[in-house]
Amino acid sequence: MEGRYFSNGPFSEEEAIARIDRFEERLEKGEVKWVTSEEVTNHLYEKFPWLK
Image (cartoon, rainbow, N blue to C red; front, side, top):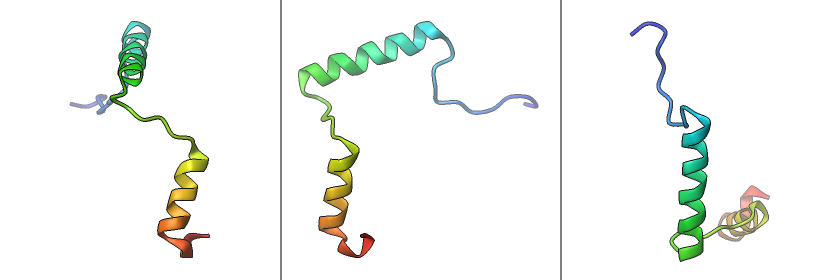
């Protein structure tokens, strides 16, 4: 197993494009909720104020 490593990422450009397309389809169907980093930060600060 020398020289091999675990990768959860795409192995080719075609696979990367297919993954992006699947994600966009799920996003359009409402299966995935997209939030900004600011929203995540605000939520964390509300839930855990000592993080500020």
